[in-house]
Image (cartoon, rainbow, N blue to C red; front, top):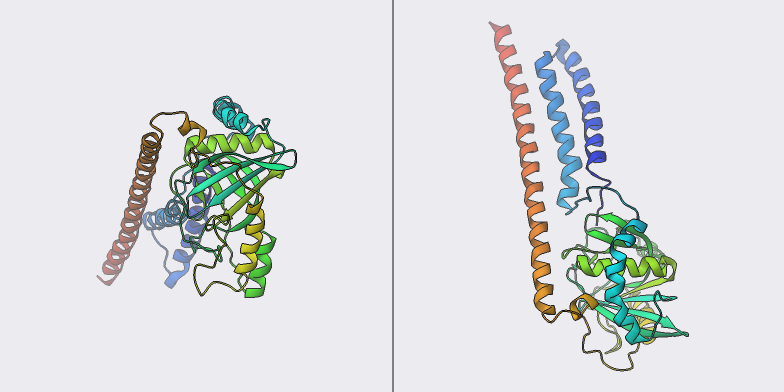
Length: 345
């Protein structure tokens, strides 16, 4: 997932690059064929250059579903804002698990096939099940991530590297993909562009990441921040290895996939519930509501509509910029043609 630095920085970069393009256009116009472009034609070409650069700079993030938060804030500020409500929703789950909050260590176990993220906390050297969250958005299929653009959610044992309180998807935790295992096997395979920017974040849609919904990510963000990133492990598996051994989904999978799945198997083997949880897959916020499933569906619909609206605005902006580009080029061509005609006469 691409995360921008903010619209001010974006347009600053656009204008800077556009100005450089305009300077080059002026130089070329002054020397091409021994003739100078008129000031009006030069200005039109310069404006066109800015539009083209704007399309490249602004269009890339838009096509990657990138949107940025309107203002910067720190992780500590986000915890202060969402912490009280998140902790009150998490409290019953931790009390039921018999684990003090915040825990000493934490495991977030994601199961692709079930679209579930389980939360486990340590207590006296053992892992205790706390709660589960629905994964509202994820792309790809069973199998590890191999390269940039394959739309795969990675599989393996990962750790958080940073918390982003200014995510385009509300809040986010970045994972250390590609980790040492991923890099080592990529080197053996001769793969170089492995991709990156893998997050657990809010919202309901994602490509290569795990979208949890805004209220759920608030709880996870606060929980991870107060537990400490260094004390959090993230497991991502294609299916639940406690229900059966993991197997490669396709015959074309790399030969090292069984080694990866054996590692995931060992990690999940430590996560055993003492009894089934009737609320599995339901976050504390959803479990507290009688209409949990309806509320979750409504949230997903509302956030999806918000993302669709943002996507439409991005398309409109790009359309306007594209139109300006065409008009600018057209003005230059018409002006040059008129100049040639006038000289012939």
